[in-house]
Amino acid sequence: MVDLIVVGAGPAGITAGIYAARKKVDSLILSKDVGGQTILSGDVENYTGYQFITGSELVKKFEEHLKQFNVPFKGDQEVKRITKIEKGNFSVETAQGSYEGRSVIVASGRRSRLLGAKGEDIFRNKGISYCATCDGPLFAKKTVAVVGGGNSALDAVLQMMHIAEKVYLIDINPTLGGDQIMREKIVATANVEILNNAATKEIIGDQFVRAIKVEQAGALKEIALQGVFVEIGSVPNSDFVNGVKKNKAGEIIVDHLNRTNIPGLFAAGDVTDIPEKQIIVAAGEGAKAVLGVFRYLSQN
Ligand SMILES: Cc1cc2nc3c(=O)[nH]c(=O)nc-3n(C[C@H](O)[C@H](O)[C@H](O)COP(=O)(O)OP(=O)(O)OC[C@H]3O[C@@H](n4cnc5c(N)ncnc54)[C@H](O)[C@@H]3O)c2cc1C
Image (cartoon, rainbow, N blue to C red; front, side):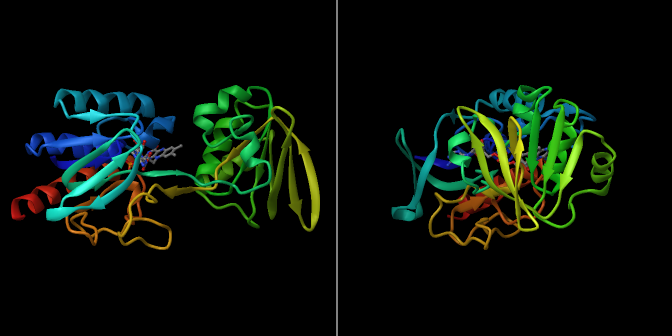
């Protein structure tokens, strides 16, 4: 039995661990990995104190900080269920075992949204990727498509237009979303072709992807390519938390002290309904959540 179990070790979970150690709250972090989405970020230019740092360098700094405070950490642990048990305590179950805590902070972040097109299941990691930063270099001098029309899609195109020979940007909407500065760069680039009002119907291949089928103005078009980057946003990792109030998007609803509707259950970072999904915001929310937990434990 510990005072606090933190689920997740992205910026929110790691910061929560550090704050808990400094507040002498007996805690345990359970996580699938270290770093969360930050590791997927190529260049980070908006984390205070670092004018420029890569996502993986920043995660290394987070890890060093965590180790300095000897925060108990168990990796490779996917939390499957959180249940309220007697005396208001919580049981947190993973495939490896079950842990008990007087309080819990859910800091499990988000994952990529799936496209839902035919063939997606077959060719995942065989030409279909959800992270241009991670997999982009595998497609050097190849033809690829980026599916999506918001900032994450534009970011992927900006990376891939320097790596791939040709990039199709396939957007289901009539006009691209995202930041104007990114759009302007993309529109002015010769090896990028933008398809608007285009619905991705199927991804075709043998052992690896070889084409994508797109419907535009009622007509089906097959484009030969070797890679497809799906960049259509993300969904919160909140399925394993039952009984807690979530919004329509599945994000856990928290108040200004990071409390959920269940006493003792707190949440922080991208998994919550806090609208800004950023590293510095998630880290701040992790810190706030522990201060909320500290108050809760003192009063209960
Ligand atoms: C490609 C990309 C680039 C980005 N670039 C920037 C940028 O430049 N600047 C910026 O500020 N933000 C950026 N972001 C956003 C930023 O990465 C996130 O806002 C931030 O990482 C959220 O932190 P978090 O701790 O809430 O969640 P996450 O980073 O998602 O971490 C969640 C953690 O929970 C773990 N987890 C999930 N489910 C479970 C489970 N069931 N059991 C146990 N553990 C679990 C995960 O393994 C992970 O460790 C970027 C995001 C992406 C995808």
